[in-house]
Amino acid sequence: MIAFSKKTSDSIVQNWRNAFNELLADGTIMQIRKKWNNILEDDPFPEIEDKP
Image: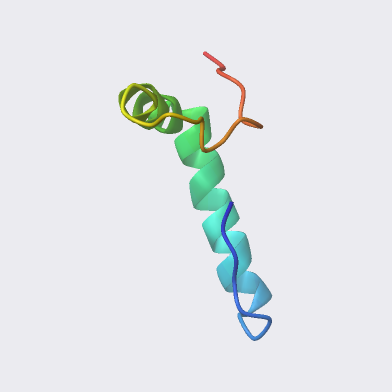
């Protein structure tokens, strides 16, 4: 989904993961997917399931 340089500190990677998980938990990711999946041919994140 996203790649970081091997030189990126673990704390930066963990901060990104935490922020992404918050967006996933509050439904923001699903809102973005619903908007853009109507425009894109292929689902860019098939591994993320719709969750309330």
